[in-house]
Length: 257
Image 1: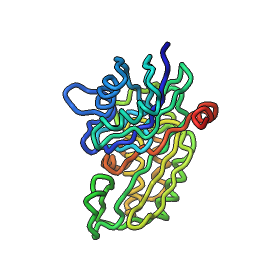
Image 2 (image 1 turned 90 degrees about the vertical axis):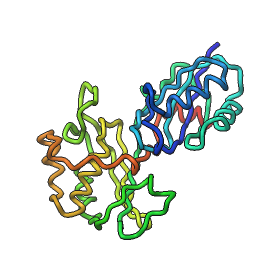
Image 3 (image 1 turned 180 degrees about the vertical axis):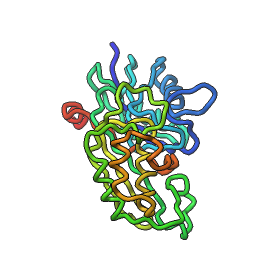
Image 4 (image 1 turned 90 degrees about the horizontal axis):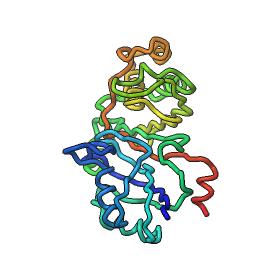
């Protein structure tokens, strides 16, 4: 009888062309799938919850596999982690009810964007592929005012790049928090789901406001006109990390048990 295993996956996206399998390039899905098929001795598909772009990292990507393997779940997790390359690992694995789908059952996601807020200071080598390094200071107070205007249910078409096959561009952003952590600025964005490059364009817009180039009301203008040209640049991928994905309480309770 088949079973469903929910995987929590972390990876450094620096050397990946994103999550989704693509011909001729290295992707996280293909790496995990290749190892999973070998470990489980089953031609499984690894279905991810979020299609992170090239260069984007994850601390809490979620995927599921449907398999008939009798191997104990924790043993399978350890075997997967041992055989995967150094830039991707399986953080957690748990059996979940049949019918679970990593993408369709997700209720919300939290992404974190990290900016090296003082570009005059050198960025440590281990961090340089995980932050957007800026050479100008940012006014975080102005950015926080603008960020509050992004919260809620809106048509985010002006904050999305072309190429997102979506029926609607309406999304709900639950919170956008901005804080200074050491020499970095961290921007956390939580929502029910996001359009193509939405968070990186939101960050690019907040940076323009933080540099004093635009007023905080610029956010309202972008939401009202739905015009991508009025928004900021798409922030580089290396500063973005998928932190976690939220699921229904019954599923989280099952995981705890």
